[in-house]
Length: 197
Picture (tube, rainbow, N blue to C red):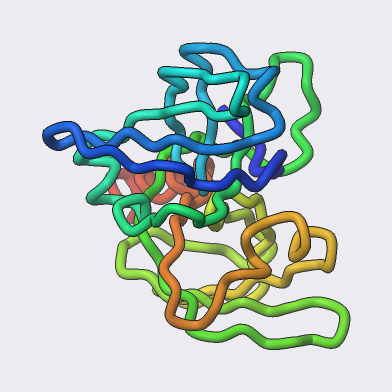
């Protein structure tokens, strides 16, 4: 379980195909604090650390075909910057919202608007998932509040701190992102589908 509060932007150092899997190696200053088998969210995708090289501040995770097909991970390139977050501890603060690290679908940024002190990003997506105005959504692993909500479209506003310390400062119209919708909303929608009138 994660909170959607980004701890670091890591850099893709290598990509190695292994049959249908992809081994991804990243550089991070946090590597001395990592351990094998640890779960880390990468742009919203929960992946397990399988190797660590503390001398180079590198660590490696493995993505299976299902993950590559469902997320933007299959398009990542060496040098790309990726948001990461370690899993929350039981006694930690829930500063964002409950994020599972299980991407629901990909979305596409259709506009970036400079709001003179913040930035408004608008996304479209093709799924039956819903957003709610003032509700929560995770975009590339970042916990955000929905501003505008329509079927298949929503916007979020980004404050300067989030813009500077996450990959939002590199995001442009046309780029794809990983989306995870609010877990409570997903359960309510599923219940209403089967039990609502």
